[in-house]
Length: 143
Image (cartoon, rainbow, N blue to C red; front, side):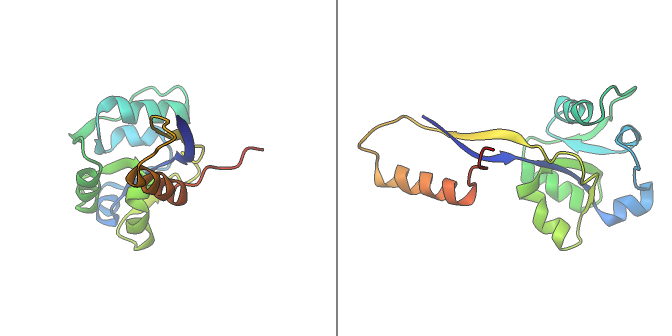
């Protein structure tokens, strides 16, 4: 079984100290001249291509880490611009520790589902987990 959840949204952010030192990019194309933090070069390049279209150059990744919380911590310490899940960065943006760049981009989100084996005798743990996910990430109603 696959049940839809709220789409997975991304946001691009940087610490105020980083932006003070390096300037704030005004366009997605300008991100290519900045220090970037990412899971890998492909993730950032794909997002920029999807959002900005045909770019002449792709941002170089200064730091590559395969852990979202570690990427967020690097951004908080002013190491560069991060593209990360809204879930991981929203509290730091609300507190002013990070500045969201290009809020008009990345709002469509990517589909997210919980996938599990259908069994009419679901365990209490599985039921509780599915209920938690459906409450935390309610599916967007279809129009």
